[in-house]
Amino acid sequence: MLFDLDGTLTDPFEGVVRCVQYALDRLGLAAPERSALRDWIGPPLQDSFRALLGDEALALEALTLYRERYAVKGLYENKVYPGIPGLLDDLQRADVRMMVATTKLNTAAESVLAHFNLARYVSALAGTTVDGRLHDKAAVIAELLPRFTVDERAHCVMVGDRRFDIDGARAHGIPCVAVRWGYGELAELQAAQPMHIVSDVEELRSALFIDVGRANRSQAHNPFKTMTLPTIDAFPERYHFRFCPRCATPLLRTPLFGMERQRCPACSWVHFPLPNLAATVIIEYQGGIVLVQRDIEPDRGIWHLPIGHAEYGEDPADAALREGEEETGLVLATPRFLSYVHSPSYSDPRLFYLVLGFARAIGGELVGSDEGRNTRVVPLAALEPLKWSGQQAALEAYRRFRSQESEVRSQ
Image 1 (cartoon, rainbow, N blue to C red):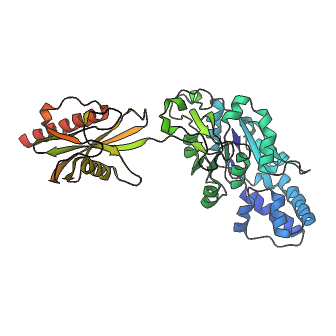
Image 2 (image 1 turned 90 degrees about the horizontal axis):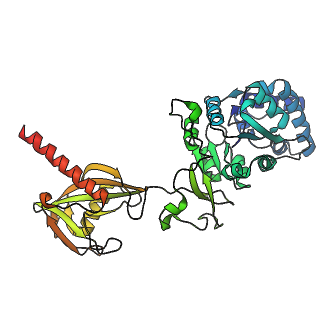
């Protein structure tokens, strides 16, 4: 795993401000406002001085003066972000090898890590060099990549707080988790399109799938080693992609965050197969329950309750109402919630959440639809078990509800 330093592991703001002010004061120049210097944390300092001064030689002189003060005072005007040591400790216990890729001068970064007792977590570090050989984030990441094994390289993730971290990682096909406690504004991070954006260390911990809920923290789950969840082949065909939807680059299959995923080597887009949300509704009509006979594959011919997927932005109750009315022709009262189940289906193993509800028919005429032309009404007591487990769970929940309702009325 690769970590940025400034704005990710430590907060260098006070030291950066004072060193910039020192350098410019020595040159007889006014320093920018403190708030403007936030943008100096992340990009190479030489670039920031050049943009401010408009002269390469003057920028180099300012950078030399900056480093003069930073080496003796500035690096101590720094602090470790809360929660970072604990996170690094968890990662180390999980046998995750960590390296630091920073645009801070290499020797300065080593001093910061040593001073704050963070060097014990880091197996390697790459920063910018005085001779300019390593100048930007992509270059320092490239310096570290040969140190990874082939397996580690396939699972590598960058953690940083600026677009420079995201872009530098993307140059090598590495996904990036962007943190918001540093110096990148949310709009900047969103525009750079990292794999995740997290607001605090606990969110970062969750994004990295580090299990901190166990009593023995030394047994924390390491997502970069044992792939126990389903491979892509276990998912339905409609979850398989050949090309990146962002840039059309052919996708690679690689273990990442606990399971095999499809990842773009060009822009670092990662496919996360998200659960489907559907709703089924038990319709009370003429003393019984409405069933629809399925007229499409798979399972053509079975009798089932009205059911369908929720559409984008649709409330589950609205989905149940819409599906119930579309499949039966009836006008329904607002459905009442019964329960929900995580129910495998014929097309969505482990990816199907079904909201269960019931509603009373208040109008309309019972007719079929394109997906189920035949309908019938069956007394609840005469209903045979339904084939789909989620719908059977709906019937059982409905029976419990009616039974409890009867008990209350009899008291």
